[in-house]
Image 1 (cartoon, rainbow, N blue to C red):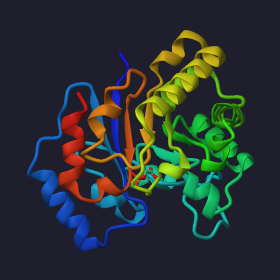
Image 2 (image 1 turned 90 degrees about the vertical axis):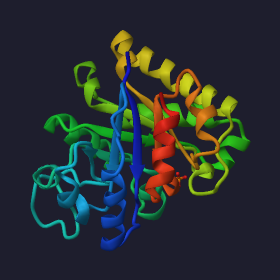
Image 3 (image 1 turned 120 degrees about the horizontal axis):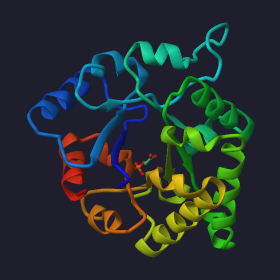
Image 4 (image 1 turned 90 degrees about the horizontal axis):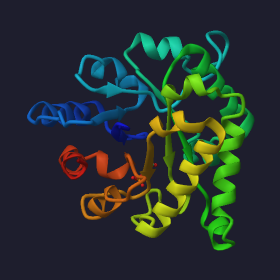
Length: 246
Ligand code: PGA
């Protein structure tokens, strides 16, 4: 059975006192749920503070080199040293705002594979691509480019997050039919590339997941959880998502 994952992507949000309040709420609840892994991706300045929590804490970004003159960047070893257990790669905000291209993303995937460091690989189309009905081809091409050279024996490191760009932070989630279609397409791509072992790779949905729409999204057969932005900033709304994921 594939594990389910509920991941909070805090992005560039929450000041220190807000993180402290989030954690106070966190400690007041039980986050143990059979078969579900809860993850937090905070700003990296908070990794050390979160490192002793009994849940998976990861980085929102990394650089693929080990160390050196790369001002402002963080390496896998640095992130590990403050408790990061995984990273996000290829989030659309990194691609669009920070101009991350396929070559850079491929390098990051390669660095994670070499370091045995787990990652969530994000993919997803723009509204323009979807309106031309090219979304399935586009996402498969993205994954082909980013997983070039990735081996079947590294699949335990991989989680995929399908995040249509038009649904991120817009309040307008993809509908169930759109999510199911794309998750099936991704699942089929993984099966073609990696065979039976690819069944272990969780595929998360991301894009305006909230307490009102999560039940129908989590009921989709190929959805193994969610990568959540806005609704994860308030710990109570994030907790409601966990309760809906069983
Ligand atoms: P959102 O963000 O839930 O605020 O749409 C999701 C994401 O970008 O990972």
